[in-house]
Image (tube, rainbow, N blue to C red; front, top):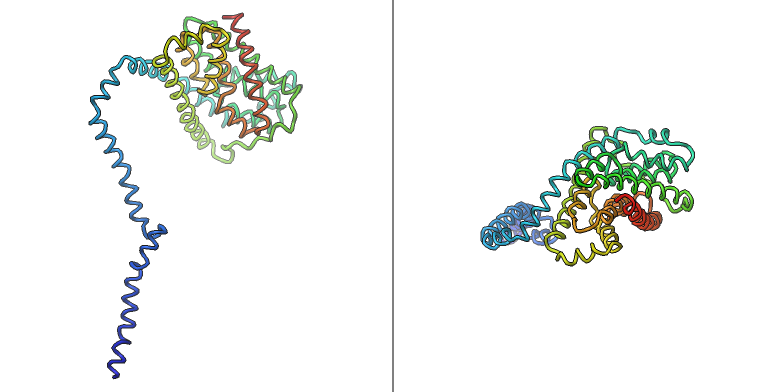
Length: 360
C-alpha cells in the first residue's frame, strides 16, 4: 500500500517537471496569439518578404517583357520619357546647388544678423527684406523656417513675410536657372524678378496695414538648434534634397504627361485664352509644388502657353503651393495661412498679368 501510495506521489513531481517542460508548449499558442512567442517566426517572415517580393517582380517583368517592350517603344512613351529626362537633368544641378547654399545660410548665418541689417522702420524694412532675397539663395522650403527665425528674433512680421516670398523667387540660383531654361527669352528673367519682388513687398505692406498679431502664432524653434553645425548642415542637405527632389520628379512627370498624353487641342484651347491660360498655370503651380530651383524648366516645356501665363506659373509657385501652405500652417498657425495664402495667390496672378503685359 505504501508503494501504491508512493507510486502516484512520484509522478506528481515528475508530472510537474514534465508539465514544466511542456508548459511553454502548452502556453505557446496563446503567446503566439499575443505575438510574444511568434516574434522569431514573424522576424523570419519579414526577412523573407522583401526578397520574395523582389523575385516575384523580376519574374513578372521577364514574363511581361513583350508587352513592356511594346509600351516602351510607343511614340507616346518615348515622348514622355524624353521630356521627363530633359527636365530632370537640366534642373537637378540647380536644385542641389540651391539646397547646399540654403543649408549654409540656415545653419551658419545667425538670424540676429538679419535683425541688425534691416531698417527699424517697418515701411523701409519690407523692401529691404525683399531685396535681401537677391543675395540669399535658397528654395521655398528653407525660406519658411528662416522667416520664422526672423520673427522670433524680433524682426517685424511684415519684413519677415516679404523675405519669405521673395527669397525663393529672385535669388541668384533661381534667376540663373530661369535664364538657362529660357535662352531665347532673356526678358523672362527680368519679368520674374520684378513681378516676384512687387508681390513680396505688397504682401509685406498689406500685412503691416491689415495684419493682426493674434493671426500669427509664434513660430517654433528650428529643428537644427541644439545640434552640431556639421550634423545640422548635412541633415538639412539630406532632407531638402530628398524633399525637393521628390517634388521635382513629380513636376517633371506632370510636365511630360501634359506634353505626351493630354490632347493638344485641350492645351491649345486653354492656351488660346489669355485669362484661362494664366489661371490654369497658376493653379497648376499650386498643385505641382515644384521647388523654385527647378520650376523654370517645367515652365519652359509648356511651349503652347504664352510667356505671360508661364510667368504666372513662376511667380505663384515659389510663393504659395500645397507644401508651402502646410509649412506656413505649421510655422505660423492655421489662422495665418488661411488668410495669407489666398491673398498671395490672387495678388501674384494680378501682378504677373500686369508685368507680363508690359515686359513680355
